[in-house]
Image (cartoon, rainbow, N blue to C red; front, side, top):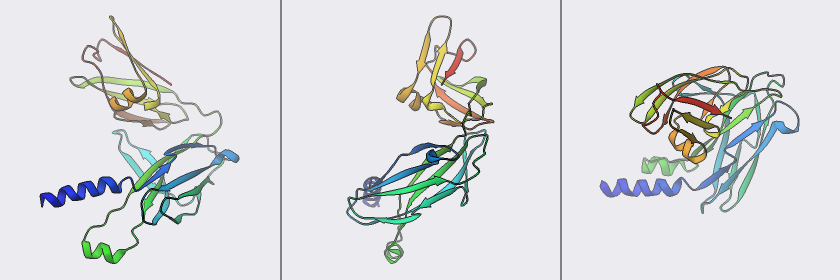
Length: 232
C-alpha cells in the first residue's frame, strides 16, 4: 500500500506538469479591441491532450471563500474544446460579449480542464486523473477605480494579523500586487512582491465588498500599537 501511495504521488506530480496555460491573469475592457485575450495551452506530454474551456462568475464572500457560478453568456470562447498534439501549443480566443455598459468591474474564472478520453481505461483501473487550471479574467470599465479601507485589525495568533478590508471603489484590487507598510514608534516594515504573496492569505478584493485576510507580521508589530497602509 505504501508503494502505491508513493507511486500515485509521483505520478500526480509529473502529471500536473503535463500541460501549461498562459496567461493565468488577464484584464479586459467591456468593448473594443481590448475586450479579448488569447489563452495559450502548451502540451508538454507525449500524448494528445483534450481540453475544454468554461467561464464562471467569480464571487468571494467575507471569509474569503470563492463561489463560482457557470456563465454561458458573457464570453465567446473559440474553440471551447480542442485536442493539443504532443509538444504543440494551441491558442484559444476568449472574448467578452457581456454588457458593454458595466460601471463596476466583474471578475471571472476561465477554467481550462483536461478531458479524460479513455473511459474504459478509467473504469478498469478505478482511477481517473485530470488537470484543471482556473485563470482569472477581470473586465474593467473605463474610469473605474478602487478605494481600499482597513476596517479592523487584530492579532489572530503570534506573528499573524487578521484584517478586515473593504473596497468601496468600482474596480477590483489584487492585494498581493500592492505594498503593505507597517509602522510603529520605532521602525517600519514594507512587504511587497514574493515576500508579501507568501505572507498574505487573500489575493483578491472585489469592488463594493468586504473580506477578511491574514498576514504574517513580525511579533514586534502589534495591531494595537502599529499603523497599516496598503498602497496600490
